[in-house]
Structure formats: C-alpha cells, structure tokens
Amino acid sequence: MTTRTAKATQVYEGGCLCGAIRYRATAAPVRCVICHCSMCRKHSGGPALAFVHFPAEAFLWTRGEPTRYRSSAFAERGFCSQCGSTLSMHERVLKDRVQVAVGTLDDAARVQPDDHVWTQDQLPWLRLDDDLPKFARNSSAVPSEAADD
Ligand SMILES: [Zn+2]
Ligand SMILES: [Zn+2]
Image (cartoon, rainbow, N blue to C red):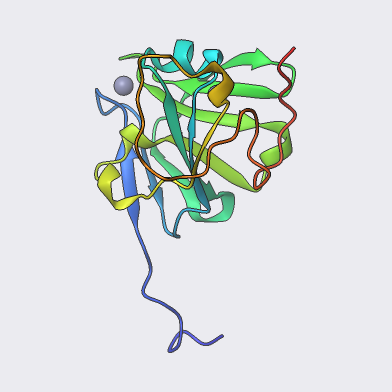
C-alpha cells in the first residue's frame, strides 16, 4: 500500500484526571469491550468498565506511564499514582494491543463498543437497552485466560 492510498491517520488522545499521564493512538481501535466482571468494578469504582483496544505498535504513552498492579497471574491493571484514575489493562495473552479505559479518552464518544462481557456478574439494577452482543463470560472475539472460578 502506498501513502497515497492509505487512509488518513486516525489520532486518539487521552489521559488521566490530573494530566500526569497522557497517551496517543494513531490507529483505529481494534475493539471496545464493556466488562461487567467484579474485578473491573473494583478497578474502576463504576458499575462496569469499558476498555478500548488499540494496536500496540500504534500506541504511545506520551507523558508518564501508569503504575501497574498485578491483579492476577496473567494480567496487570494500570492507574495513575497521582490521581488514582483507572487507565489500562495489560494481559499476557493480548500483547498485540494496549487496552485503555474508554473514559480516559478526550473524546470517548468517537468509540463504539462492540459487546458486553461477563454479564453473568452484571449488577441487577444496571439496565442496558442497546442491542450489542452479550456474553456471559468472555467474548469469543478476544482471547482470554480469565476463568470464573
Ligand atoms: Zn493522574
Ligand atoms: Zn472485567
């Protein structure tokens, strides 16, 4: 492919609440997943946590970098040590991408979620009337090592 036929570069920028950590992605998201698992609830403090996946080669931390907390044998979760913002998820099996919390994007409305996962843990009072695919556990579209026991 030549540069003449290449699509215009897409740029997505975001960061934490205090601005100590900033990032830039220069490719369209690979995927966006809304997770209802109890660990994502704890990590975010919200009723669910949506992660947008960018290709690793098109993603850069442009200021600072998240502090990582190892939440399981196969994953680490990133946050800002200054303001506590939930920032990222780093899974051993998904080294081809960087997952960032969708709410950290400067313009999160540009991203479209693909599906809901771990809906078996969804809070009963959280009502969703979108028609996105819902998976009781993992989505078949994304490899995962997570198990529910
Ligand atoms: Zn911060
Ligand atoms: Zn989760």
